[in-house]
Image (tube, rainbow, N blue to C red):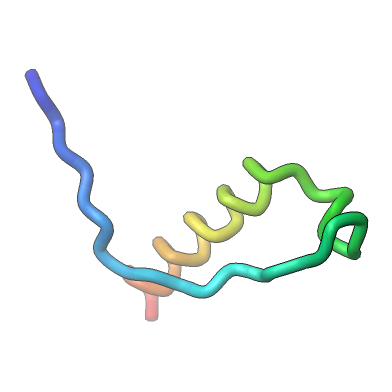
Amino acid sequence: MKSEAYIIDGLRTPIGKIGGSLSTIRADDLAALTMKKNVRHRFNG
């Protein structure tokens, strides 16, 4: 069975500099945070 995914909403993400304050946060952790906030915003707000 083929499943499809759709982008239903968007949020801005932080933009940093190389070696800046976001350099200690893994990219997948930033992506997960954005996805969680997107779901919360879409279904609870």
